[in-house]
Amino acid sequence: MTFGVTPQGFEKKTLTEILDEIGGEQRSTISPSLNLQADSVLGQLNGVFGDKIRELWDVCEAVYRSQYPDSASGDALDNIAAITGALRLEATNSEVPLYCTGDAATALTIGRIVSVESIATDRFISTAAAVLAAATAWQSSFVYTAGDVVTNNDGTDRIYVCTVGGQSAGATGPQGTGTAIVDNLATWAYVGDGLAFALVPFESEETGPVNAPAFTLNEIETPVTGWSGARNVEDPDPLGTNTETDAAFRARRDALLRVSGAGTIEAIRSDVADVDGVFEAFILENVTGSVDGNGLPGHSFEILARGGLDADIGQSIFDTKPAGIETYRDPGAQGRTVVIEDSQGIDHDINFTRPDEVDIWVRVDVDIIADNYPADGDDQIKAAIVAQGDSLTIGSDVILEALKSVVFDVSGVFDVTDFRQSKTSPAVGTTNIAITVREVAVFDTARVTVNTNPV
Image (cartoon, rainbow, N blue to C red; front, side, top):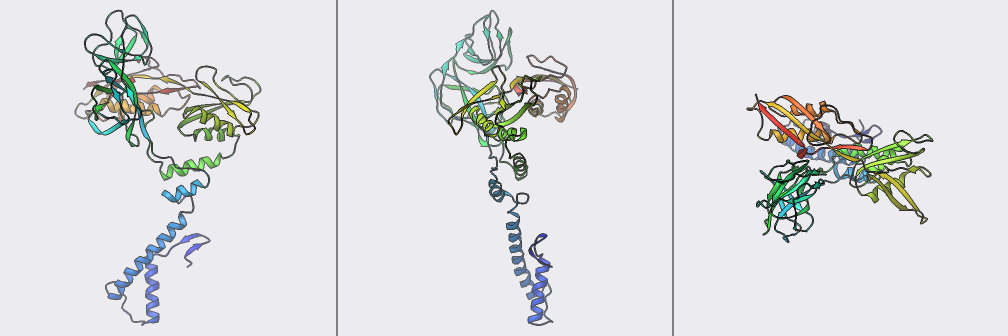
């Protein structure tokens, strides 16, 4: 039998074959009557040396396999894939903004640490410096928009952020420490004590999917005089990722190679999806000579992209698109135009669209078996619904039964007695939610309400 590199691939010697060869050589050159039994001195020596030779054959096979993407792993796979321009996706951090509250003029340097309540090991670090600024006082009969921050001068010195815009009440403003405080048509969330605030970006201390559900990232680990509170009103976005696995890297490399040409729909979409920070890309095309049902002019295409920088996306489209074909953008606020200068110094308007993010509110009433229902069961239900929602892509409708079904994945859930979903708060709808081709449904645990009833 031929060993090593053969027309059929790499054939390595087994330990049995190695020992047979050694024993055969010894008997032919020393004595045919040599005792080579495993428990003899010579047999044991052969076993030691034979195993070391087997290790060398394993190394030779590993070197051979490392030359091919389908069998290479780790650093070898990185090197092979780099030849065709594919690079492994590195691990990323989870990111989330925190409302930091306290006394006006309090300075927060980069590196402040806040942890998730009851999970001290899940820590987030501030990535920008900030100075707390005085919040405006709540006003009666005033139209607020989501994101507005106020303090209610009722002697409690608390800061609130508007989560649902609308006209405030005529008398009392938000009170208490709730996460959905109704104020006539507006809704507020308590974010901390004090009369001043700053919205500060934080990222997880460790890479990977470090989760901090809305309103749980609030334990200050590096106190500063004048800084009294910190709170997130939304889940981390983006959620961190682990280093890309060998299997996922191979699959993505294959996909990149299949669409490595320029000008095709798949090539354009793939190149945009490969832009740093882009986590979803979708493409619409009109091959006719007239405006189609999506509003695209004849012989044009439209990229819808989530994540990444506008300039990087525009450059990617310009580098890949066919000559003479128009790029289209939504005419509204979500449309983007990037001016790209070519090698001749000529400017080109490259258009694309950011899908409109549609916030989804959910309310679920469940019967539970108390003995089997975990202490954090409500949070698990919220996380399961959000995870299912996050799997939806651009233009995908929100199917009520699909969201409802994941509730049963939580231990102790006996029945779902009511399930509501809506584009507005509170959740009241009992049917699927239609999402247009330029929209994407977005979910957050802060917009999921769970009511439990022991049975």
